[in-house]
Image 1 (cartoon, rainbow, N blue to C red):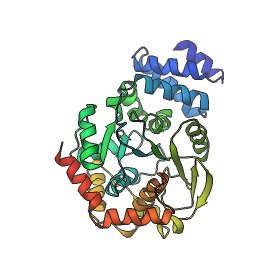
Image 2 (cartoon, one colour):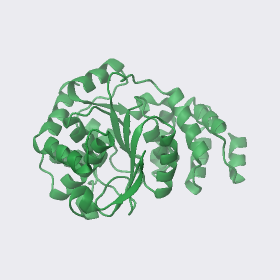
Image 3 (tube, rainbow, N blue to C red):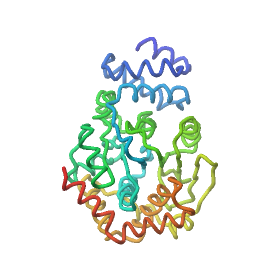
Image 4 (cartoon, one colour):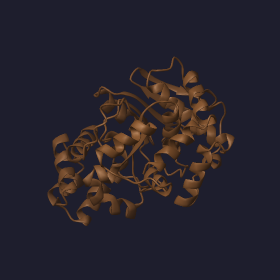
Length: 330
């Protein structure tokens, strides 16, 4: 690692192959925590290259525990995190609305590293039991339309760096890797990113795959459709800018989508919204993200058609039923 660090300190970048080798070694516990922290710090000080990100992704997938969900046509809705906005769990809530609308969801998530409550925190608080047992997750998605893939169980390399990420409490390149490393290899993907530069990198990487994808970035820095500003939307077909009025019928304020100050508060907000008791602003933001995910599948002629389907899933109680069924079979 010392040679790698010296190389990076000379403002050089890693090849795809070298990046993969280093992350495989991190996953195998070959470096001490000080070396790993120094390595991660490099990428806090400069932008990651496409080759480096590809190498890191390939290492994570090579080391991962496989999730065989090939019998299902799934979607993942995931943000990179690290935007520092402390919103409630918008992407995870959107997953339940999408599942309530009839689309199978393989949600990949983790504990919050730079936020109070990541998707794994809130799912655990609600009573979900993490597992990498393929029969369990297949049964969940078959019976309820959704399963949750807790990243550390599927990616041994993340166990090594988890405590370091938590102690740093800052966005690291692992935030960028999460959406690229879903072990179920979903057919469709809605990815929220924290910067336009990251949107460009993801666009390049996802164009190399066979996935149907949509990348979203709120122009005021959110890694999801926040309705606090216009949103950049990038798909296989091209890119556009959409307004809050187009996406969620109105603009909202940052205070409207705050995530609370503890995991317990986050879980309470989550359940309140899913029960159909959220505020207009909370519902609008979740529905906009769910609608964009549904629209990404190509099964709806217009975004507005997908939005109406998302509204029906939440208002009818179908989305909440998905959660209740999922927790009941744990």
